[in-house]
Image (cartoon, rainbow, N blue to C red; front, side, top):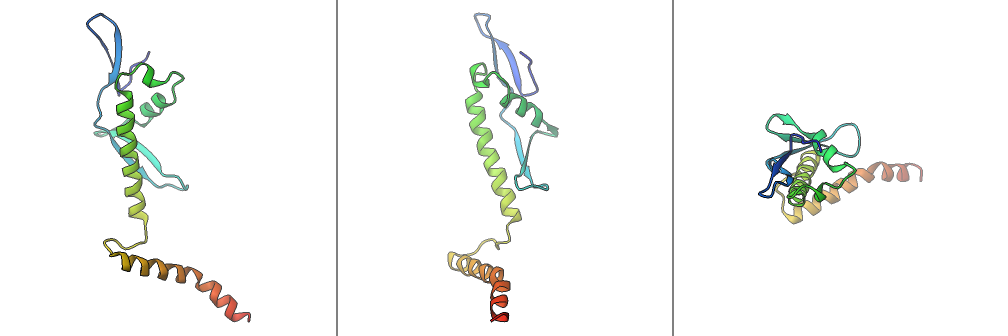
Length: 127
């Protein structure tokens, strides 16, 4: 079994070879490219480990069957992925930040009216 940049091999007291994750200190970044889905990349410091994560997740043998702390690692990674995606969508949102609930409702109503304005003009023009 190949050991990657994120998985380390060690022996227990009985001499059995076991595997565990090297670190849980992974940064997750989400960026938007030309499609609808965000692109998620994984980093340890300045080194990108996206391919290591993908090869581990999509390996024929389930990683949780041989890596001791994989379930904990996967839940940590999932939380970081969700946080990165939410931060990406917050940066891309046209909604102004730090608004009260009433102002958010007015803003949503204004955007809806603005989006429907061409339809209102077309209905009024062709009446």
